Length: 357
Image (cartoon, rainbow, N blue to C red):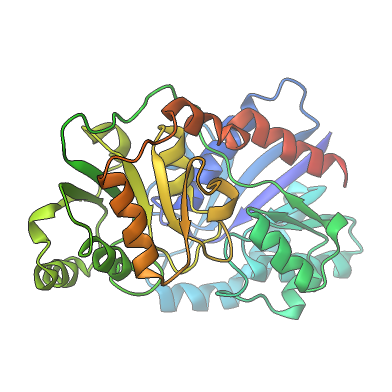
């Protein structure tokens, strides 16, 4: 049986990658016939350990985990030696990591000790927004791609198809459906960090909604330092009475009384789990058609709509169609559209990838 070691740097404890790790290990437990053992080692620590419950893990805490500059210095000074100790102690067959620096160091120690350990790069970002160096790409033996777009980006970087496994990200199965609006007011939903510009790009959503007529509201789940900026912006558009600020909520879907469509206006993502989660609750989706992520989840016109990134008029038209009472697909059909991301299907892709090594 192969021994697999997942190495990660500091993790806040409340991000999307932590959710992926939690679901990964939950999926692993469900495997009837396991061909590999798995352990997570976090180098740097975490601010919240709740996400580690049920995970076979080890924490390597560093004193300055809450100071980015000092933590970077600690990594520069000590990460190679920490990894050397861990690799000699654990003796893994495969090292998996989300971090390019860890790939590079693992390859160095492998060469130094003439080891046969294989390195899997598990990158969670669009390469066009967070590029990888040639050295990082050459340090990995295999790649786990979390979206079809990232797989294509890797191939354009010269990585051969046989070295890339498209595994996506895992979601939990659930039987709960977010009820659609029963009254005359359409409810749109946003879940994520509050950013007027930048990655999350809520400006486009507000600009599009300002063009929508009829009865609608937007429920916003999330927090961030730009909250007051966003409130000023919707005030200037004159739509402030239609926006409900719900704050951060660990269970936004179950706290919704009604929800007709989840809207995402991001400029870039790896694989946007908010779309997958929305679909798992039977919610119709509208998203910018960015380079990586949304097209893996949304089948345009079937379980949601994709609009050209930056095309405010197209987005407004799609929102208006829903307000005007356009017939939406059944919620069970939307749920079924993301079954390929559920834990049982996901972990079989992971195991098949490991078995090929």
